[in-house]
Length: 216
Ligand SMILES: Cc1cc2nc3c(=O)[nH]c(=O)nc-3n(C[C@H](O)[C@H](O)[C@H](O)COP(=O)(O)O)c2cc1C
Image (cartoon, rainbow, N blue to C red; front, side, top):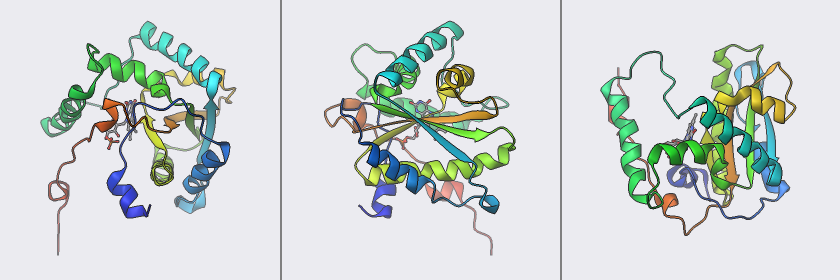
């Protein structure tokens, strides 16, 4: 699949086949992620891959913590969001609701699903050194885009999971990650389950005109 097609088609996967992803394929998408540009070539990203039973063991800890601390997916904004953003968030909920398993609450699905990496056989934990300011998250984000698109082009499904950054301390302890590194994002990685309703969800986008201003 070419890059433009991957950009058009990619969407988050929230149900996976119980089929292990070969290590070579995971290595390949990390290779593509590390081709990303970065300010003065600092390449401030690092990846920890947790698979199989260890991924499940980590998820049990995260689900427990999520319930203890009553953590929920949110925008992490500094002030209440203006309507135009709230509408985009509501749009996501509207596009997902018809595809949720019977009787499952939207927020519970997202919160518990996120901690469970939506059942993916592998999870990637993306790290940055604490020495860097938040500006360098830009570079890590670009690298993650490369990873998501190359995974899609290679037939894998992914879901970025920001929720679990609330459990930075637990994740670092479980994966033996040194204090000087910070968890930026997790990514569920596996083969999409083609029979799962939830994988039919297509999230909306505002039109390019709404977010573009031309000046000449
Ligand atoms: C930084 C970031 C954090 C995200 N965190 C979560 C998350 O914790 N749980 C989840 O289910 N989806 C999460 N997502 C996925 C978004 O909900 C999804 O990308 C968005 O709704 C657009 O849908 P699409 O990826 O299918 O195009 C996250 C995406 C990004 C980029």
